[in-house]
Length: 124
Image 1 (tube, helix red, strand yellow):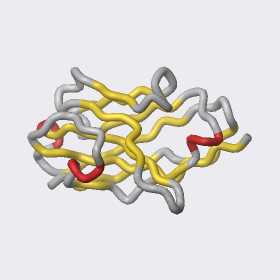
Image 2: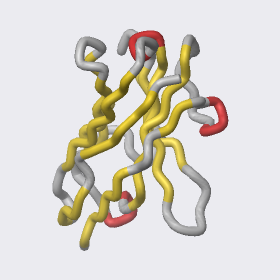
Image 3: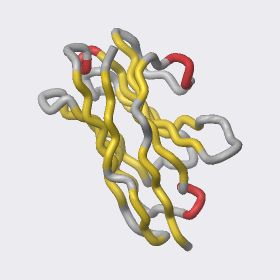
């Protein structure tokens, strides 16, 4: 498994930007598809974006397409989520997740490694 630690969350005004980072430990990061999910109280975990092990394929939820960008640096064992034009409805705890030796997927249960989450709050 890959151990994951998210950072970069915080409070931002609507229209602002944040960049989330997810640092991974372990030898399998470069062989893992990575995803970002988010969750608000009382709701199920929601897919945000995913990236293949090489970075060559990416996938976004319709709600963030055109505003968020996922990327990864395998040399640094880190995956990023650049979030622009943030809206109050983007407020959530954001989680990083990994799938070893598998392709990208939008289903939370398909991922076998999870970070602890980082809070993103967008004020109106």
